[in-house]
Every structure is written in structure tokens, then in C-alpha cells.
Amino acid sequence: MLGGLTGLVTREIGGVVRRNVTVVVLYLLAGVLATAAVGYALDALHTLLTLHYGAIIASLSIAGGLLATALLALGIALYVKNRPRPDRRLAAAVAAAPIAASLVGSRKLGWRTALVGGVVLLGLILGRQFGQGDDAEK
Image (cartoon, rainbow, N blue to C red; front, side, top):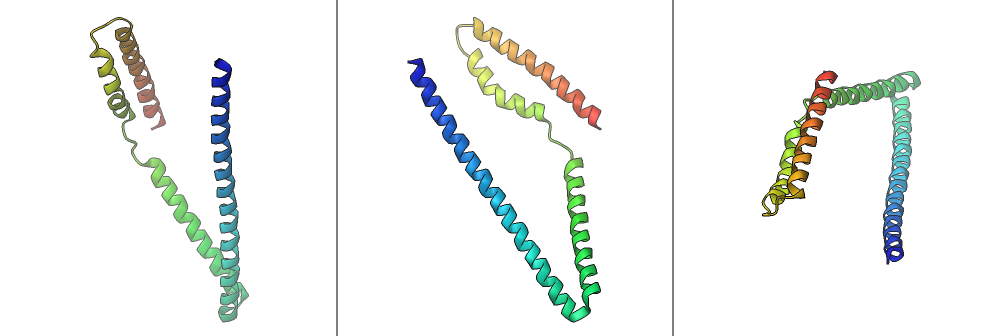
């Protein structure tokens, strides 16, 4: 009984891992191909600019464009990093509320009540830890 269940779980996990590895490899291949395409496009732009303005101006123009793009990406990254974060404690409490309500709503108040109390206590402790961690980052 247990051996069959273990085999089923192993096959399921193997299938999920195989599919995820295939997806990651395809993403990497797409990234390499996109990088090559951008490289060829920049080379074509350099050739076009060389015909009109000369080699030095063409190289400097492409370098300036790449620098401006890098600075724009850096500015966006800094904005996203310093943006105020939503309060995760409220979201965790809202997600756990239906579970706690269903456990408490039962007529039998034995181990379920203790479990709900433990979850609430753990939530308070973790909420305080996360709250102190957010203050320390600022």
C-alpha cells in the first residue's frame, strides 16, 4: 500500500520537475537568441551610422544609447526597490481567517481550539518579527 503511494508521488514529482526543467531550458534558449538578435541589430545600426557619420561617431552614438538604457534600467530598479511595501501581516490575517473560523465554528472545542490558539500566537510572534525587520531595513 505504502510502496504504491510512494511510487505514485515519485512519478508525479518527476513529471513536474521534468516539465519545469524543460521550461527553464526553453527560457534560457530564448534569452540567448534574443541577446544574439540584439547584437546583430546593434551591428546593423553601427554599419548604417558608419555610412552616414563615420566610425567614431557611430561607435559613440551606440555607446551613449546603451549607457542611457542602462541608466534608465538602474533608475527603474531603484524606484521599485524603494517603493513602499504593502503590509503583509494584514494579508496573512485575511488569508488565515476563514480557516480559523471554520475550526472555531465546530461544536467540539478540543484540539482545534488549541490549534487555533497556537496559530494565532505564532502569527503574533512572526508578525512582530517581520514588523521589526521592516523597521530595521529603513
